[in-house]
Image 1: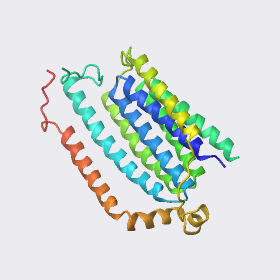
Image 2: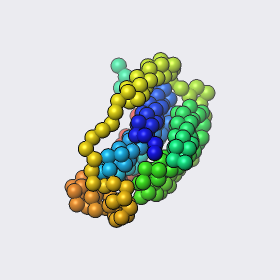
Image 3: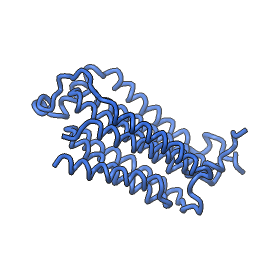
Image 4: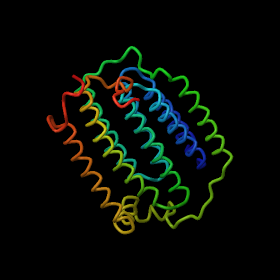
Length: 100
Length: 173
């Protein structure tokens, strides 16, 4: 048996790799991919705890995460296309219209 | 056997996550994420969540990543000379130390709580898909309907955002 803490530590590592991606990358598309990484880390946690605590609620919640991820991708990529059409760039450093 | 499988899946997951964040070409980022999603599906199988493993492959790898690839091809993005934010070492330093702290705390902590009635044998008796479906359509019916509303709003939002003329097309010119 693999202990629960192994899964939790794995998911924490993947989550922080995702956060680093959001903070350090310049392309919007890689930032969206990093958000997917973070959502997957949360899903691993849900399923691991559902298995460990002998409850199926965690697996049901992964469905709702999946729904939110699909909605996020649809709106995020639509925003990306709208931004690219207006500004000809997907670089977050150049999108400083609202920067003070 | 379980430990070996877990070690393999976890290693590939972490390596592919790092590649997703660090690779220069956007297409390589998406392909690294694809490999990572497949190995997460393997982790779900190890955790007796076969249905979620299949859904992971169909929805994440099949639908979401294809959508990413589609947009990448549509925009025809080139790899940039400088692909990291200018303050990236600072971000990696801060988040690396926070991650080390969290992992240390997780190693010290113990995870015990009241266990439910869905043991591995109980789930196997009714079947994983059926067990999830029973809970989803009884106890979680309202969240399920709200999820459909979220998807509808996202669909309308995507159409409105990408339709020409719906928002001002001349901001940057």
